[in-house]
Amino acid sequence: MSGTDVNPRIGVVVITHNRRRELKRTLRLLEELPESPPIVVVDNASSDGTVRAVEKEHPGVHLIRSAVNLGAIGRNLGVEALPTPYVAFCDDDTWWEPGALERAVQLLDEHPRLGAITARLLVEPGGEEDPLTPELRHSPLPCPVWLPGPALLGVLAGVTVFRVEAFKRAGGFSSRLWLGGEEELLALDLAADGWWMCWNESMVAHHEASVIREPRRRRRQGIRNTLWTAWLRRAPCGAFAHTRAVLGSVPPDLTSALAVIDALAGLPWVLRERERVPAHVEDGLRLLAEPRRRSAARRYVD
Image 1 (cartoon, rainbow, N blue to C red):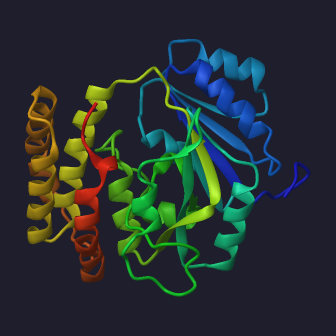
Image 2: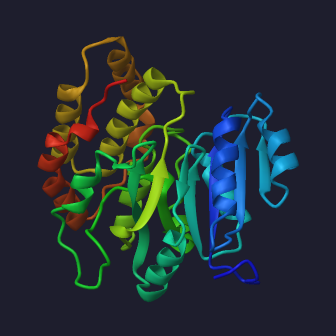
């Protein structure tokens, strides 16, 4: 691919909120990619001059301004604005390495049942692999021989490339979850719809965590969302087991207590909208339970 492509195969969607400095760096790096993907930025009601900076310094970017903070739903708007069959998501503090998107296009073109590919994530400024990497690299899930990497039943939203058809058929990101582990429900819906997801060593993305964070709020939402997802999609025994594992791993503090209260408050709509995944997906989740229990990267701490 090149900047002269009239029909690019992949675009990038970035959501942002009050991280002007980080977004400017990310956009600069995305605009330097040899793939020259079209870029959509969804601004979630920033008040720090983000919109003005994008308009002035990155006129080639398609900017969507939301009057309210939509959280992950902003990604859905970005996908609708792209004409490409594939979309690479990017947070305002992550970016794709040159060649990664070209590799994603190649793999998705070659494997029509592949719905999403998650990249190998390097943590900056040191360039170490993200702590979750061993769990992804050594996934115990069975998979077909054609799959270009270990099979997954979960993705990292900010460093994953999706087939747009699969993304839309699964409904995109849920408006119920907002942010914090919001990709867990989407991944289960992709799997239930028959799409494969994998991790790929040759696709690389980078993350340098922003100093502008709300760790307690994100932890509260992450605990709530993983409990909601379990009860929305899993068999009763699996949902109970996951709930027990989550509650046994969270710190005994106010944030965890509020997360549980939030989860309980949502039970009426969760049970009303509950739709169990197929048996083979539930079997896969059971295989993942022990690796996830041992994972140091899945601790609900600030």
